[in-house]
Image 1 (cartoon, rainbow, N blue to C red):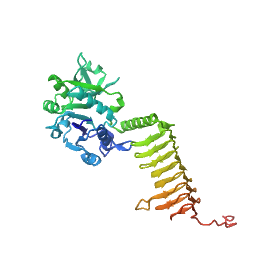
Image 2 (cartoon, rainbow, N blue to C red):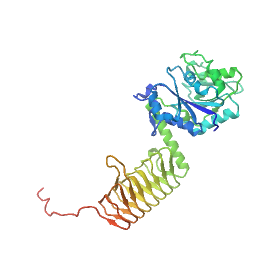
Image 3 (cartoon, one colour):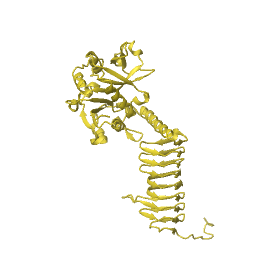
Image 4 (cartoon, rainbow, N blue to C red):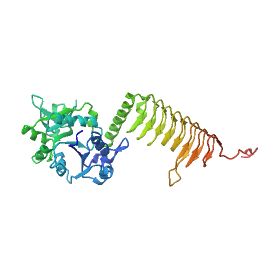
Length: 421
């Protein structure tokens, strides 16, 4: 996307329906804050210059976004037009396009934002709206078109006539404006409506009255424009996002036996012909190769790199683990902060003791090693290639290659000891 595009993300509202001490925009949807997803969508669309309009609990939003954006302050909540007015210092003297987004609409695809800006630029439109077709458009602003199909304006639901309320095309609340003409129009909008607010939608009518060309892009998937106001909607959008990611994985050749119980977070790569069994979770920043088997009831945490033909079985948790080709962690094990070589077998109940209460340490297991059941590997520790660890051992020292390590007391049988119990 061209560099002369600025994005404005509106994030100043209170969001009282979330029933939380925190801003609704810092609530997490599938592991990531709502506002962070909204900003990242603009970034993934190729927009680097982003302004967030903050107000209520601004410190929480600034803590999440840090210095990745610029900030404009909206002290009073006087409407969407008033919000954008607070960003004029970042727009004055610039040419190009400005994309206006809502911070509580986290599922908009970057490809949709690109399409909106590209149409606006190629068709030389001064305002381009994202719209949608709803069977039940109650509550949404209606798109008013003339006989030729050109957009004349937008009427909010509470200000619409009964005839206008029959219109199915609605305003999605995402806009692309010409910067210079937007700045002129913002000076002309008035709070002449039921709410007494400055509507950003009035900019469309102002531009039309000047004879400036306006247009729209109808979104292909209406779930992209859904907003979040309460925890019910948060759960619904989380479910949609989870299904979106699962669907993309299946299209790339990953088998998912039960999408309802499979959780794959953002920024996960999984190779073809890998099978995901039910009740498994893969967190962000994980890479899994081809022909692997994951689950059921497995938990793959952040920072894992799993090569081809690896098995992660039932009730296994791995974290920051690098596992080489052909190795198996079949069941009931925790492998954290470790490197496992090729064609290793990790016995049931094995754990890497990676945390001493102060620091995390690493375990390294060489190629072709066999770790017996119920083994504790106390990090930092290194096991050479082709080592064999006897079941029930607690390993606190390095084990040389080709060695058998036994770290347990001898068995003692006391005959008759239990007779009098």
